[in-house]
Image (cartoon, rainbow, N blue to C red; front, side):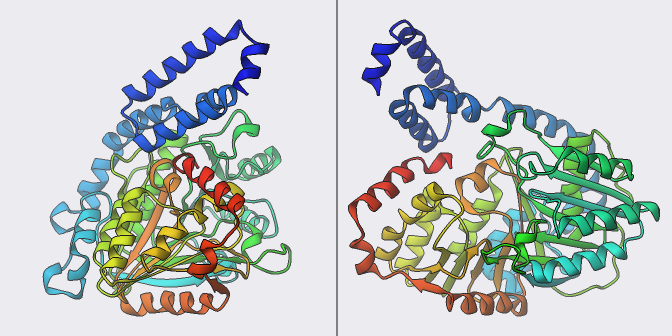
Length: 485
């Protein structure tokens, strides 16, 4: 390829290499993650022209810097006042952890509580399996809304699931309920202009999160809002992995079965979901809503579940979701179970899993046998050899597409959310996860995990080693690009 480039375009060669020089200088000055820098350099080497174009579209951080600056101003104007009024910094942990069953996860709890994720006990949590359980619960809660309905989604589709909700939202506006909806500019790219016009004409306030100018280049564009959040009247919240799309309901409309997990929340923890929504609402709309009792109401005793909600994104200085995963894995005493659709771990996550396995912690990983992205699937498969060598059990989900993002440690900790076990979720996307510390809830997730194993094939180490050389080579090449996927 290089020889052809030199023959066809000798005049452009100096210009091209000058461009490469400034790209490398730019990456060095930004003190980038060495793994990402190596991946981009490899891309520039293997694809001389295309690699430079890809970097110019997706590799620069100008957009990230813009987000940081705007978010900083928003946090100063709104975030601190919320924290001062609604989250007393001296009472972020309601019980002495060292004297409670939570002691095992003290580092996780204290780490999250230092950010925007206070631990609260006055909560009721319901685990929802697949869209079949989630969507009816959402519709019921929306029907009962009295003051406001806030929705923030990566994918919101105008289909047999999204249409009924959209119609109901328009009805609630007529009843005097404020409806605010944020959809991601890439994930919800399928929404037509007519949908936005209909919603706005009916009184629904709807905004795109970071809309894109070139749809053809959006398959992996950076800094997406991957969260799934609903807050109703400040009392009820929904969050997890399920988007608003009819492929999640497994009713025969789509041939592929989708396995996913979501949560319905009531209680103090909903305040954190509300805060996260309001920050992004101000970001997309420039409307500053007053943090009063309408959005952050007082709660009577709702439940007894210790719960935390945690967010991360390119505007967060700490990669808090990844770090919380590390702390949870390191806190394991017996077993770690992980279900994720995309497994492209950072070196620190991979080391934590391998080290735990070598310390006789039983590690079980469930990933889909077939993914919706062949390059991500190949990269994921490249990690299986080292996992098997450490004694980690790997299960390939065969019933359909495993989209659930769940981690369970022993029998008393679980994380359910939008974050995949990959670089993109840890570093580039806006994500939100919920942490559960109640045995009864964790047991439900464990039972679901065990039931899902019946639809899996466990990877056999000997057969895995004997795969074809071309397959291994494809996986290894894709793994080199893992930090960019």
